[in-house]
Amino acid sequence: MISGLYQGQDGDSRLTLRVDVDGVRPTGRVSGDLFTVAGATTSYVGSFVVHRAHVVDGRIQGQGDFTFRVPERNVAVVVADQAGTAVVAGRTYQVSFASPYFRSVVLEQDSVVGAVPFVSYPTGSLPGPTGSPARELSVVTAYAEAGVELKSADPGVIPVQGSGADLAWDDAELHHAMTRHFSQFGDAVAWRVWLLVASRHVGGYRGIMFDYDDAHQRQGAAVFYDAIKGTTPQAQRAQLRTYVHELGHAFNLLHSWQKNLATPPQPLGPDGGFGDLSWMNYVQNYRPGGEQGYWSAFPFQFTDAELIHLRHGFYRDIAMGANAFGTGAAEIAPFEQPVEDHSGLRLDVRAKESFEFGEPVVVEFRLSCAGEPRTTHGHLHPDTEFTQVSITRPGGRTVLYRPMMRHCVDTSPDIRLDGGNPAMYRSAYIGHGRDGHYFQQPGEYQVRAQYIAADGSRIVSPACPIRVRLPISREDHQVAELMLGEDQGKLFSLQGSDSPALRSGNEALDEVISRYGGHPLAVYARLVKGLNAEREFKDLTPGNRLRVRPPDPKLGIEHLTQVAREADTVDNITLNLVMRRLARAEARQGDLGRANAVMDRMVATFESKGVNPVVLGQIRRQAELTKSALSAETA
Image (tube, rainbow, N blue to C red):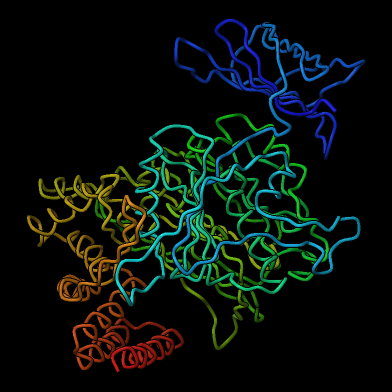
């Protein structure tokens, strides 16, 4: 066997070479990365891959695809007894064997006290596919089988300061924990990834990959113990899959049904990607057969295409902290209606008639049945990525909206759409994402969405026009400047944060409230500040201790009361959230009567808006459930 990692140097040029022509699941490829050495520094130059490597009498050769211009594309490698020569880009390198692994990554894993990290799963514990060997599989060995070495750093346990703290994490707290931890890394490419084993997420998710902006792309993930805990073989198997899946995103692997959105686009597997037997697929969406079909056929390995990416992807496309996850703000074609659509589903995107310059752009998604009753899943919000959004800007360029935080959903409860429940609704702030602000200039925009249904159907909405008005007064200009900062966009996405990394954004919103409190856009600053004050906030300190800031219901009431008075400014779904959180703040202040009155006022507000009877009935039930929950909490 000659496959593995080799290293060599020719003068000031250093080569890292991956030979993959024999051994376990060989891909028949050779790839490498080139660096320039100057004194005590080393800089990345580019990468190459030979997709069709020919092996003749111990000589490996073929045409290479390079990320940079080269005088010669032919690549030739001769190795024997763990040493040899490689001719790349017209230079000859003496290379020596360095590792049987093609990549090596440091895995740092910390767990919050009470959250027990996964160890391993014996794959023979439950029935599986014929031909897949039974073995003891951990996260480390799962990646080792793909040719990637995960070198575990000393695991840490994060203690919690304060008793009675709610250990459910939201996106803002995870973002803060990430910035605290990543501050130790520096803004640089590094073969290093952090995994946080937390208690639970407020949304009930099993895992999340941190990829929120260009400074810290794909450097960390979290898994949520309460959603996957258990000692049964089924629970241990699910834990293994969740850990490997989330770390796969850190290696820039997309979900199986999203690979056509990568740059460059990759072909989808069977059934629009849902037929992939991969760590990166969703078990419940596998076809044919759903969860049972998946586990009966899954051999606990990456697909061939994923294996090629892990072993031979270009350096900046796979190294943590380098290129963005999946697709950047590169131009894409707007989503097109399918040639035939027999799904029985209709997707609409709705927005207010126009937005002030600097106003957070929020749209509403409506999924309805177009005739006979239909059953599908309820993941309509774009942060789960079953719904994707394209934005065509005034100049004609179309980009993909990429949410700041993306959630992996390993359960998909069925939603039946019929006469009694004809539609489901979600609202989403799409003004800012991982590529920054999407509505940075006045003008006419076109927004389209695509929803991937439970059966794999791709439902495309008609275009929703969004008009961003020109600022008129000097005050309009000044408020817009305060609203459109990068940190402010993150705060709108996270619904507020205590993170010092976002201090400038919080200061800008404070200035909007204090200096321009009468401006129409001040309601959005109060919204963010009020939602953040009303909740507790977890702070992962530099000493790796978890400190919990208690809620400030008084401040929350001050801001949210003013937002609730602006019922015609914010969208209905956000208004519903605001009033329920306002009621919780009143209850936490010890006034259950005022909390119940807020819920009664919520129902009356939506009655006066003339929402349809089915939705109004749901709001009434929601109000009564909120009253009961708050009564139980304060008892």
